[in-house]
Length: 230
Length: 244
Ligand SMILES: Nc1ncnc2c1ncn2[C@@H]1O[C@H](COP(=O)(O)OP(=O)(O)OP(=O)(O)O)[C@@H](O)[C@H]1O
Ligand SMILES: [Mg+2]
Image (cartoon, rainbow over all chains, first blue to last red; front, side):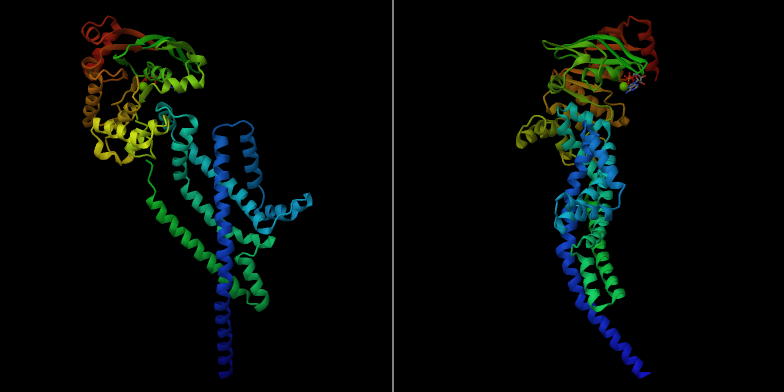
């Protein structure tokens, strides 16, 4: 009985030790890789999304068809397949990418396609009278887009855009499949040495949870400070 | 200053403007009256190119344009000489009152910010809303239309079009807006005002145009129009509206 007790205690002690030893080793690539990967990809995706939404809204010939095609392809194929295609597939065409830039490209394009639709919906929700008023004060179409339509649309699109940022944090774990040493990959490596999958995967899940919770809080606070349009 | 001739406009099969001619001279205050659906808004919108007319010409000062074939460049240039006050204000929702008033200067006319703000503050003061300069449209409770008028004034237009500027307002606010417009008229501002306010038309306007079914039925000085309307339909319209 006493022996069993001691065994259990030793076992728990081992778990606690592994937990604390690995925490920093998982968090560090989280801070050094997962967060930059997320932020860089998201920033690029916003530019792509705004451009993609605008060429459709403004009915720019050719480009708007390219935009539709891009959205159609990206939203109709799995993210994991896209990662493989770019990282393992493109070298066949002589295009060799390092894992991190390959991941950036895929996440930017993927998130950009989804956000383009969010932004387009928000742009289309800007009342026509706002645009007419813009013309009447003498603004050009482009000036109206950048000073009236987009600021209002980005405000409207704030909640869906925040949600896609939060999804992206979690989706970056897929980059482990193309050898990017982000949090999840780091966890897998630790696990292959100590073999405590339950503990370690729960631990990395906890860290993702913390990241997302912080983001959700920031979103809520930020949203409270944004002005209501109507 | 501004003459339109033979404006035609249809929406699908519905012919809304059936050949309209009229002239706005400098300093004119013209009230456009007419029953709902007679085409008043459409006329104003065609004159400011918010709607593309199917036919007719527009002469501004000495330049003549075919309304159906206007170039973007000309539209843009002519619009900078005019201003428009909408029934539902259309203030920019992402801008403060002051930004609303100055954006036509800073963005559209590339004026520097401090010069534009000086003008903007002056215009807000003129409409009595200087203390609300940092309020956004949805916080302007009741002051929206006056900010919209300040916005129209800021760009120093040669002519201002008003489309029923008071008909979306609560009764207690109508007086404030009309008094601002009366001041403008007295200062010599050229204005074309679609309105249902007969008092305004009678006391402030110099000319009255009465529209019916896409045509101008009667056009006269305000005094003559109210004292001795010529057309039977005009008399009936005045009777009905006076009874309301
Ligand atoms: N964009 C549009 N598409 C189709 N029909 C329109 C459009 N705008 C106006 N109309 C129609 O044209 C006619 C004239 O409309 P308009 O708004 O010019 O009248 P109005 O004299 O300003 O009336 P009100 O006093 O109600 O404002 C109406 O029958 C209206 O339904
Ligand atoms: Mg109307």
